Image 1 (spheres, rainbow, N blue to C red):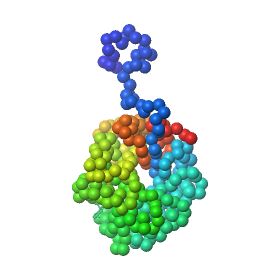
Image 2: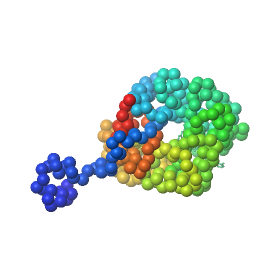
Image 3: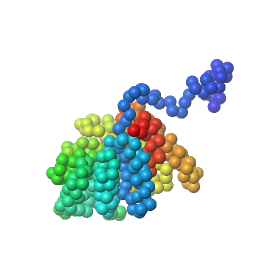
Length: 314
Ligand SMILES: Cc1cc2nc3c(=O)[nH]c(=O)nc-3n(C[C@H](O)[C@H](O)[C@H](O)COP(=O)(O)OP(=O)(O)OC[C@H]3O[C@@H](n4cnc5c(N)ncnc54)[C@H](O)[C@@H]3O)c2cc1C
């Protein structure tokens, strides 16, 4: 600590020194009165009654932050089709939120996918997050005969069903099966050219990776918003497994942050808030003003980080 003090500091009162000295949060704050960033939140459909209660407590708390939309995931291979639909329908009926339903095309015919999309439209849902989905673990992806082969085909098909707003997935660290980073950009461009208006990124921890990805998107002629997906991480053990599958690099410093905290969830949650807050502030000072939060159906971390970004409850 004494190393940080300049020679004159010792003579100054402690409070003044503290107020004017170096700070952890040294990033410039947005100007007073500037518009808060636009937020969206992702939930997953609950499996049990207890998880349903947890989800709706989370939704009601985050609703106060007036997100642009909230999205509900679709279990691998469409396994949560009914639960995703029930959650989205309840969002339409019971809240003022704008829901976005995730929909995958893996393992289904075009008719089946179109029927699900039509049900959403009839239930008042106007926004779909269109995804290819993954093959069952241990098997390689192969398009369903008679199905939409890839997400770009799904986007075009959804547009034929109805005039949905469509978001798609983007991968700052490149999708694990893409032939090359350029091939992945071409895939993203095809999805946007087919009618999607926004991409939401996979989570990432190295902010520079995302910013470089934005640069590459611009150079490839992609002008649609590429909204960063933010995941406040409390469980690095789970993350290690997930990152291997998803190709997301987990920096060593992140593992070190959680070192020795396996049995201490409370401290892990505090550390998670600090890490995610720093990430979003760094993005904010680099001009990013839209964020998508992977909430994992818990409000507290997302609420705190949104607050740090300048978002206040209505
Ligand atoms: C924001 C976000 C939300 C997600 N939500 C869900 C969810 O709710 N449910 C779920 O199951 N999964 C979800 N996923 C995961 C997603 O389904 C997987 O990452 C999947 O492997 C790829 O989906 P995609 O839509 O990006 O695929 P695509 O954009 O179709 O591309 C994926 C890969 O397919 C290949 N490919 C694409 N087009 C072609 C072509 N024309 N010819 C040959 N090969 C091609 C390439 O290898 C490409 O990298 C989500 C991912 C993100 C980032």
